[in-house]
Length: 436
Ligand code: XUL
Ligand code: CO
Image 1: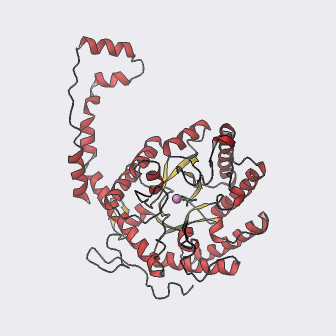
Image 2: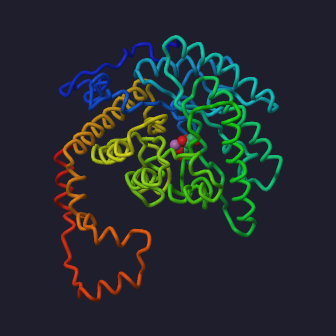
Image 3: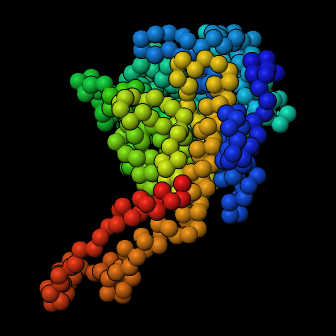
């Protein structure tokens, strides 16, 4: 226990009429939607880094937050930070959390010392988890902050950095496995390049492919049953990120024969930076069979950089959970808030209220998505739009054996004159609004 959240009571469901910012209006964990409760559908997770590590700095100014465990450069302060983190998890009643190695332990002078500290903190977490604390949705390694990674992690021109990364990921996978983590995430970090003038693209992609293949092999070696997830992101921190978006990641996985071994953790803000919508990225992941988990933090639509804000749009949340549900819902994945406060939101209560609002938006989106699917509100019109393909003649065009010239001959003999049909976008948008 810490006294950081001392005066804040556990958050409860207050119902749609509550005006208390520290109560849920929509997230009613035990309420059933179909055969699962809201809690089982959403599988909320809170991230360690933005809440307990980030100090409020931006490119023009430093620390704004005043947390008692800062700068967390000793193991004692790291434990104080963990005490506050687990207090917040309990207050929010979230079933999961996520962390990078670098979030939870001060780096040691050697690799061995860093691993020892990570394991000590994992022991500390294990005790708290056993006392009714949340489970681990995913673990990951921070291979982007330290200057040794400035030219990449597994894609670094220096083989010593590649080897250093192997040791770091192995240690983080071991800890994730030991804590019962349900996934292991690799966000590309600095896997990308600033200028082709100094970059051997072919070599870097091959290094990344080999590294990921070894991560998958190691997962099987230790019997880790969770999913390995890649988190796509374009243009930040390097100008040309190799894991640009879901489609790019899929091409990379195919090339290295890993498309059945690795899935994606799709982040809303990263989708926006890639010039997509969140639902586009989720629909792509579902279609390609690599949907895994989500980071539910939005991006500012004007800024052009990663703002990691809490979600606040019910329509966007509805379309996101629509895709999640259409993918069959989460299996090992969940809804992680990789979200941070604005740097003027100084109070402990801001951390709680931000998550309460974010969780409520997700619950609202989930409820709308679930109803739209139950009513076939979008699937009905979608099916009607493609109904022509249900005829035998149409299906035959796509079957094995059909040829371009054969179809051409039929089209010419029938003197086809296709009649355009309305796409009905506005009517469909109105239907979505009705469910929000
Ligand atoms: C970076 C990002 C990361 C990953 C985990 O933009 O989203 O926090 O989620 O490394
Ligand atoms: Co993320």
